[in-house]
Length: 430
Figure 1 (cartoon, rainbow, N blue to C red):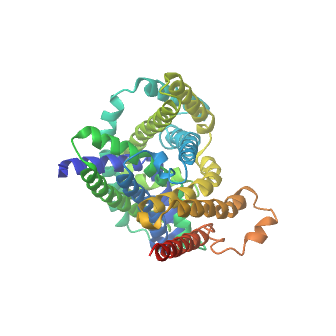
Figure 2: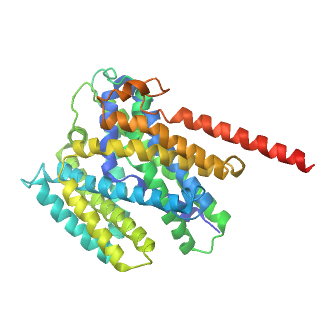
Figure 3: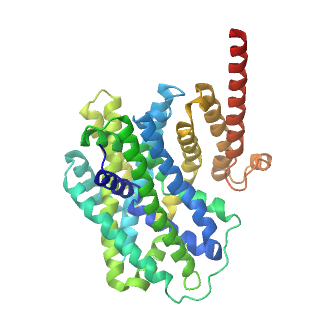
């Protein structure tokens, strides 16, 4: 039988997996720029960085399989291709970003090292730990996250009660949708479809739990982890808004440094930098190990596939990780505009009742999402193209969410058509 301790352990593990140290740099700047509208961006950010990832875990609690199972109702091949795309993006963006965040938060303020040198040494160590699968990372991880949480809660509490003057007006034209899009940068929705399968396997190994017990444990743990994420993310956004009269910057890591020094002094700033560096390292090891395990399974459990994938992942980390955080964030936007709508659609379809998600519905809705996410993607990669003027009439185009209403409409129509066909067949049979 699942017990409360097991649920809490699972919830803590989920929180640790979601709240990668790199995620801490996004909420404060979002709040700083949102100013007096910080609640609206918090709601948008929470939707894409908390609610959708938690729904992904609900999907896993129902499927109790792997990430590929999210796309399996369309076809087995689609599920594998989707998984491959997610891991490729993870290796090319959030993994290198951990080195960039480490450099800007922990190394650059204290040492005169070049970013290339740091990323080279960083991913050489990552490669070593991936190949050796040392237990030390698990031990470090158990203590790192609690320490970071305690520091962040102290920073948030002290910062919110600080006398910082009037909160500035928002600079955003669309606060809610801006919060949603910034939440994409956490990669938490992708994390939900990746780590959920790992947790399902872990629950199976932890004890003699049946399907229903594992589903309840994962669902309750997901709600607990989501509540923790909401508190931390919401607190950091509110903190940024509260200091909007004290600092104006576009640099995410500079703002985190400023907030930690203003609340906890130099010691707090240094401590946070060290903990973030260690947490970033364990995140990079986890991402590359997961991708290498996936490729190993795809190629008949061949160890060579594991080693090659780990090497390629670390090589990408060295090349991309030497760039600064703003550059990596900017580069990530087109990929996120493509993969996030698809991921959100697959998550929602997999938690919807089976009678409303036939194979036809899956295929039509996913195809519609891919088609109508193209305008958002194209606007980023070719902002000066005349084609953008033709697509600008689409609903929610200005909010970079042109795929939402068409996908919802196709979902409703496909279910209406399926229901009509079933009723017609039932009348014929009678």
